[in-house]
Length: 72
Image (tube, rainbow, N blue to C red; front, side, top):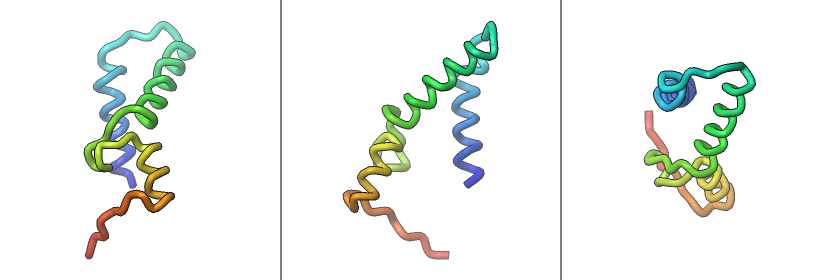
């Protein structure tokens, strides 16, 4: 689970922290909140069939998407 979180933070740093100088905590919070909405609702992810996470979750929960089972 940590790899997913670390990947998200890496993307967030590349997309925002390293490119912008924020004036305040509230500005930072607003920008990051908007990015999180984009990341979860619109950004397509290759590892989940090129769907946004929210759409993939909905499809998975309605049995519209199957995931591969991994053997150890």
